[in-house]
Length: 381
Image 1 (cartoon, rainbow, N blue to C red):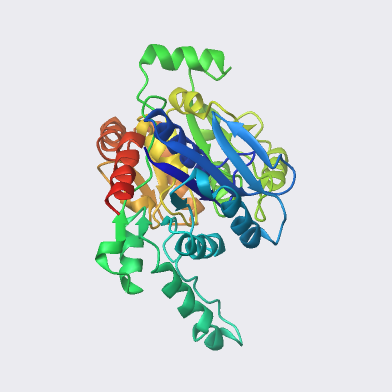
Image 2 (image 1 turned 60 degrees about the horizontal axis):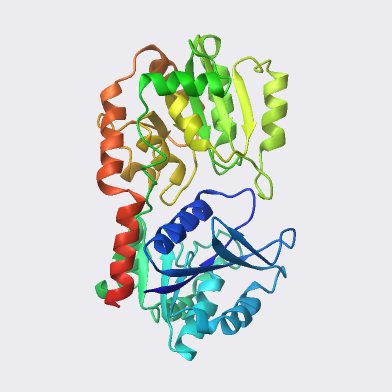
């Protein structure tokens, strides 16, 4: 039996893709007879301890002190785990690595974004000094003390190599999808879901799922929808998600944009939901205009549900969407190009791309495959 402590950057409503991914993995591990607990940064707005789907969650509810509080919580729970699985390469990872070496625990760090090892320095008067900062070098050296670095994309693998991580400490394990929830629906199931969700039976349904933020390109999506010719008259755009708690939230902007441009008949903003799989299986086309990603869970889920996918040509995404094979890529931030892709998808979309997308997810990105690879890594190390 493995005894695992997952350390997350966030784990409170509204739950985003990374948190959902971690909790599904935790449930999968527990169903296999392993013991799992979660420690996560909190805002102070939710309980310090609760269980979700049977998974114990301890929140670090003192803003600004999470790294210190994590050490205390790890110490208090030290008899309950042997493995620390950190789901980011930031300050929490640094604390976890130091604790693991002091108390003879294994520690594995998941890198969720290319460039996440050392963030790029923004141009400015102190940029040269920051590039030479001893802290940047010491962070890399500290991360090298982890038992393994888990890369979710090949771009991240290359970034780890660039920073001198030895091959034996790099594990490529992408995110996984629960294919018992996200799968290609039958025509009958799609009609039934649309009826139950009160969605149009005769219009093409486009859908976005994710945080309602600038990073996710919501402004680009809305502008593109406005620029479409007949599409917004003959189709519906369903937007699932929330911007609550996000610094770059565009939720209010989206509501205002829809009203000011008279788009209430063609755009439905649903908000955060617990049944995103039902909305995906009821839809026809998935739209994902994000500006930057790691390996987006939203896109993995849409592909698993065999949706025709249109997404930004960015790192992470372009490892999943292969033009003329699994979907369509558009230039990042290009509303005009996205509008054209939306129009073309409504008129005539190649459904073989959607079929192949689902096959790829089933074969390479299931939650079962991800859990098995992690189990093997934890045992081997």
